Image 1: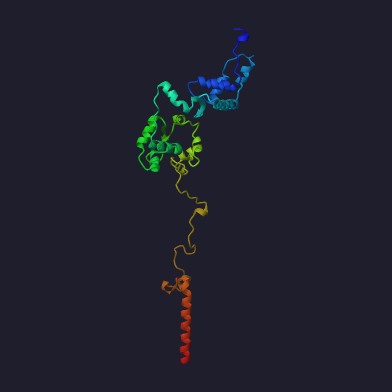
Image 2: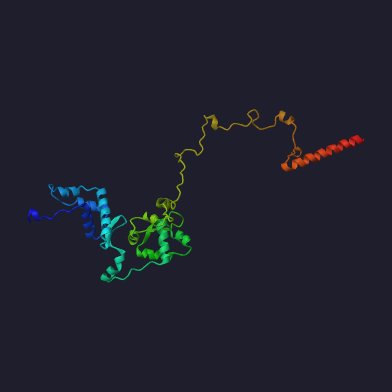
Length: 293
C-alpha cells in the first residue's frame, strides 16, 4: 500500500469517542476512553496521532457533550446515555417496539406499585433497614424486598450496630441502568420536594456512640492517692480549738430559740391588704373602748 492509499485520520476527537462507544460491548467511562486513545501505538513522526495521544480529561468531556448534541440533532434512532458514570449508545425508547419485534423479545415486566414504593424509599433513604421502610409504609415489606433483591435492584450494604444488628439495604448499579440515571444525585432533580438523605450521616446513625475511656492508673498505684506533704489534701478539723466538738461556755449561755417561737409569713401577697385593714379596724375599736372608760 502506497503512502497515497493510507487511511486518513479522524477529523476530530469526537469521531474517535463515538466509534469506541459504538464498538464496545460494555459502557465506558471518560477515563476508559482517554486511556484507549493514549495507548494507541503510532510513529513518532505522525503529528496527528501524537496530538490525539495528548488529549486531556476536559477534551474527552467536551467530545462526549458534542457527540450527545450531534445525535440529538441527527435523529438517527439512538442516543448517548450515561448511567453510573459510564457512557454507552442505546436506541431511543420510541423505537423499542420495533427492536423487540426484530429480536423476538417479549415486553419486559413492570414492577407493582408496592414494589415501586419500597424501591423509592430505599433509594432516597439508603442505607436503610427493613423496619424503617415498614414504619414509613405501614405494612410488611418482606415480599417486596425479596422481589427487588431477586431483580438485582437492591442489595445488602452492611449491618447496623444497634441492638439486633438489622441489615442495611441500598441500590445497585443496575438500578441506575434500569432507570437511566447517571448517579443517585439525579434523584433530587426528579422531584424538588423529595431530597435524598445524607448517606454519611445516615450510616453514622447506625453506629454505637463511642464511650470515653477513663485514664488507666499504673499498676500498684492507689485509687485515691493522698499526698501527706500537700496540706490541701488533708482534712482540716471544723474547730481546731475544740476538736471533739463539745459545746463551749459561750454557746451554752446563748438563748436557745424554739421552732414554735418562729413565725413564717407564707400567706399570698394579695391577702396582705385585707390583713392590714383588719388590723386597723381592731386598733380603732380599742381606742373607742378606752374613751368610753
